[in-house]
Each structure stands twice: as C-alpha cells, then as structure tokens.
Image (cartoon, rainbow, N blue to C red; front, side, top):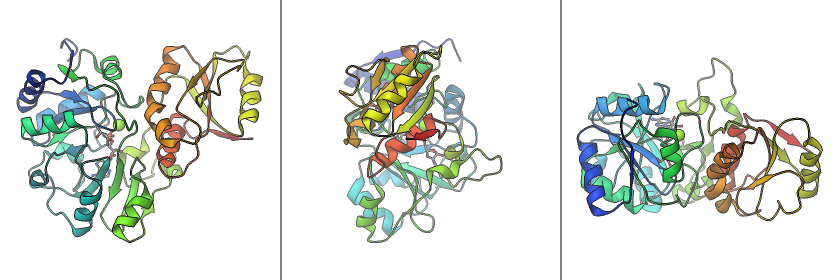
Amino acid sequence: MSDVKTAVAPPTEPWLRQAAELLRQGQLVAMPTETVYGLAANAWDGKAVEGIFAAKGRPQDNPLIVHISSMEQLEGVVSHFPKEAEKLAEAFWPGPLTMVLPKSEKLAPQVSAGLDTVGVRMPAHPVAQKLIDLAQIPLAAPSANVSGSPSPTTASHVKNDLDGRIPLVLDGGDCPVGVESTVLSLQGKPTVLRPGFVTPQEIEEVLAASVDVVATRAESCEENFAPPSPGMKYRHYAPRCEVILVDSELDGFRSYVEDRAGDGRAIFALCFEGEDAGLAVPAVTYGKAGDAASQAAALFDSLRRLDALGAEVAYARSPAGGGVGLAVRNRLLRAASFREVRL
Ligand code: TXA
Ligand code: MG
C-alpha cells in the first residue's frame, strides 16, 4: 500500500485517458471537483471501493458519494429518481448538491456502507466531468484527505495526505467552492444532512416546500447517538492545532487573542483579510468579512496553513451563519470540536 509512486499530473488529454484507464482497472485517482478534491474509484467494483477506505483510513460505516456526468448514468446508481429530485437536478446539476436516494443493486455494497440509500451528485468541474465521461463508469469519491483532516482544495493538499497510497492526482488547481457539497436526503421530508454551497433556502424555492436542516450540534459525542448521516458522528475537518471560535466584534476578538499570547503555546489568530494588520500574534486569514463564499473558498487551506506554521492554538473569528455561511460555520465548529467563546 505504501510503495506506490504518486504522480501529480495536469489534466491534459493523455493524463485524463491514463486516469480513466486506471479507474477502469480498479485503481484510485484523485480528481478536482468544484467543491474539494475527490478520491475516485469505480462505484461498481467492490474491491476498488475498499481501496478508498484503506487509503483514507475511513471508518467502514461512512458511505461514499457517487459522481455521474450525465443523467443516463443514474441507471446503475439509483433505483428510483423521484419528481423532486428531477426538479433539483434541473436547478442545481451539475453542481454542489448531493441527493440521498434509494440505491441501485448494481452499486458495490461498500459504497453505501450497509445503507439502502446512496448519495449521488453531478459535479460541475470540467476535469471531473471529462474523467467520468472517459471512464464511462460512475465514480464513488469521498474527499481526498486522510480521514478526519481538513478536506483538500489543492492537489498539493492531496499529495500531502495520500502520497505513496494512490497512483495519480489530477491537478486542476484550486477548488472554487472550497467546502463539500450540500447533502440532501429525499427519504421522507427533504432534509439537509450537511450544509454546503447550495443553501436550504435555494432548495426550498425550487421545491416550493419547506426543508429541514439537521442541527450541527446534534452530532454530539454521545456513544449511542445515531445520526441520519453516518459521516456526522466523526470529528472532521480538524487541523492538528486546537481551534476555538470567538464570537465577537473585531476589537473584542483582538484583545481576547492578544491577552492569551504568552501562555507558553504558539497562539495564532484565524481572522478575515485585513484584520491581521497590527495584531500582536501571528495570524492566518480565511476570506473576507461578510463574504461567506470567499471564506468557504479559503477555509480548508487556512486550517492546513495553521499546522504548517506550527500553530498550537488558533482563535478563530466566528463566521456569520446565514446562506453559504451555514456551511462555513458547520466546518469550523467541527474543526473546533464545537468550542465557541461568546464575548
Ligand atoms: O463535495 C463533495 O461532496 C465531495 C466531492 C469529492 O464530491 N465529497 C465528499 O465526500 O465530501 P465525503 O465522503 O467526504 O462526504 C460524504 C458525506 C458524509 O458525511 C457521508 O456520511 C454522507 O455524505 N453520505 C454519503 N452517502 C450517504 C447516505 N446514503 N446517507 C446519508 N449520508 C450519506
Ligand atoms: Mg470528507
């Protein structure tokens, strides 16, 4: 497993063909999507899918999302595509919306980790689309990080996590969205299991019906808590350093962080662009204040940068939680193991 040579290659025609061939042979390929990089395998090949779990160190009971590039491929992935799903696909595909639907018998059972449903999405990234077209198979692909660490938004994030474990990373540059897709269950009342770039309000508008959102806090660390989405029970998106959110105006945030400097540990601020000027502690920024899309695009890289800079504790400016900010807040809260100070 650890003696594979990992190539990082541009998504040129020959490399895309090579990647498609590897996938058809049951191997793993990391590919860019508009959200984060995915670690792809043939969703019909159980052995290939097992390889994903092994490479990531992913818990066996956490199901994978299947990626398609055309509506025809739904056959062989889901057993039923309801009217609501059609409307949502029309509105948001290709794009960062994953729908949880009844699965097809043809899928490798490992994809769904024992559930009778499957999460499916059509990514908007041209490299992912081209790869699926060439391979002519649906691709099971979780985020291409080691389980638990921040999701990868650049090819070098993938290389850092999975070097020696997979043969190929297609380098499509930075992922424009930066947080993972919205996961929406269509089993019963439409319910957002994981917030993402497509917001609950946008989904409600298309369905002309109300949508539930699973509370972030619901994950709790209780042993017997059975979350609707298995992925929600694991600590996620966490850098090595300790993260603590600070919900406050900028001035309050600055003095709170500066007061904590000098406790013997490497204290950092995780704030918005421009807010680091004149701060008495080192800082990493994640996007612009009041611009959730820019925060989403920068967040995971910023968490990884904190580790690279040797941060031991990072006090983070709390993001506003509305719209896309719901996803940013969800990821940061998890990175912080739900610790948030309110000033
Ligand atoms: O944007 C994304 O969704 C990225 C890119 C690569 O497409 N993929 C991604 O996959 O984030 P992953 O495996 O890191 O997260 C998938 C999430 C997990 O929380 C998992 O538990 C949930 O979706 N999920 C997958 N299938 C499910 C199902 N059948 N029922 C409920 N939750 C499901
Ligand atoms: Mg993931």
